[in-house]
Image: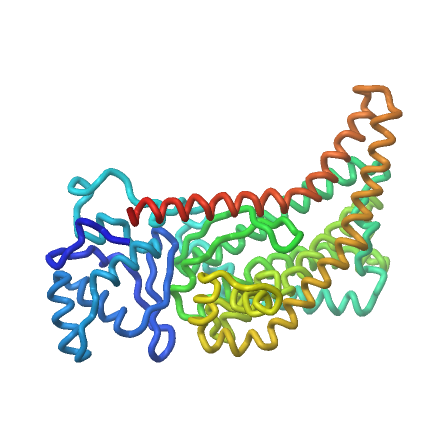
Length: 424
């Protein structure tokens, strides 16, 4: 791509970019407003330092040549920053908004952050201090002890049905699960805010599962040790809710507490929900919270994609872009991918098994029962509407991930078209 207004006399506006040393010879360069981050060599960090000091492109090129003993294409570097979404064209050319064309390029558009992530750090920091994490871990340990002491507290698929009315039970379960999923993501956003990072909430897909996801891209501008709390915050909340649901049932089973049977069934449903969530987060191959923890601990930068492309090339030919990604992959990603691919393959097999043994049979039974009700019950009666609702819920659970795949592909095409317009 070429930016017409960018030349040797330009003074690119890069002072708002964050620069942090990642490894011995690598730096993370990012723009918190667009939530875009890239890894650059030490020379790239030095270029930003010189441009931030107010030097022109020509002056920076001369200084870098004196330091390195070879010429450096500063214009190409600045254009790369625009293509990566870290700068818009006006910032790259050093223009004020009045001097440049109206609007920024699509790749560098500013992010609309989730409102809950804008809370001042001092408000939410107590939720993620040493005392708080001791409490979260204590909740999980205590829950495991109660499970070991009374195996009847372990969840069963039957716990999803709080009432004898199937439709009402599914409605209650889905509403509660959705509500807890939102608070799970809010806890991620709170932890990000405590670390000074804002976030976005979005709907995504993990394999065959539809999930809510808090985008905390800005964490990559922080040292690795400061990323773990936001990554694990959702699981911390889930551990607390799980303890709060198991403890009363444990006391009830011991005769220490008298509970209404409906409350006991509701708590059992919460246990099923939270155990499922925590188990899901441990499935690193689905790029869950634990995947981010693992990638941070191993120092990987693009582990999932490198693993996927490494397996893909054994089956079919990669595109030129995919070949470039694999060729330029970080050594740590390639090293960890040797054993991570086993988890990846196991995950694919597990999802296939889950779909064949649980998802599809459940949808088949639900559609069969609901179809019989819709056909046999008087039209527009309460029983008929219950059948219609069950059909809708079954079809949504089956097709929702496909809609996310479609949405992401459309977004990718729009982004590619935006880059083409910039290049033109």
